[in-house]
Structures are given as C-alpha cells and as structure tokens.
Amino acid sequence: MTHEYLPKSEIELEKWLKENCFNSNNYSINGNSITEGFGIDKSGGLYIWYYTERGQKDNLKNFKSETEIVEYAFNQIKSDKWAMT
Image (cartoon, rainbow, N blue to C red; front, side, top):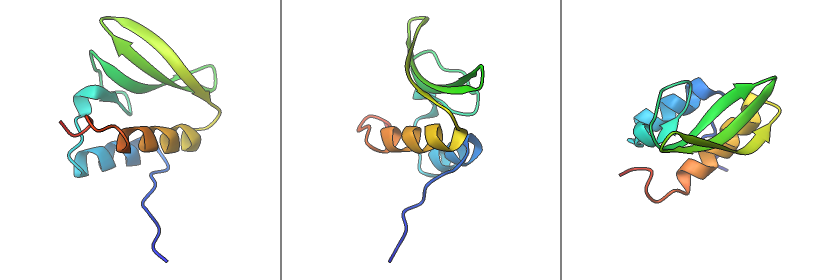
C-alpha cells in the first residue's frame, strides 16, 4: 500500500509547494507575503485559513493545530486547478 505524502508543518508545506512548482504568489505559507490569494495566519492560539484580495482579508476557517491547518491547506491547494499557473 502506498501512502500519499502529507506535510505536517508550514515549513514542509512550503517546501512541497516549491518542489512541485506551485505558484507561491497565491499562497502565504510560512509567512511569505502575497497581494491576493490564500494563506495561513496565527492568532491567539488558533491557526486561520484566510483569503485576501485588494487589501481585504477574510478569515475562512479556524484550526486548533498546525497539523490540521496544514493538512487542510494541502488538500485545498492540490485541488485548485489554478495553483500551478
């Protein structure tokens, strides 16, 4: 049985994005700055998956652990048909 790779931290997710030629301009993972797209933020012990566009930031989903948000972000990015453009 083969196991699909699943990053456990923002650093692993960032590395996976680079190794698989994903467009890091659309994803703020591990603190890189973007003008538009999705990202991971931390606030008061929560991890937040957000979308930002034209300076407007909308928090979409909260997670209690880095592992949970990284798994969610990984699956969102993998299923985004525009992520590699």
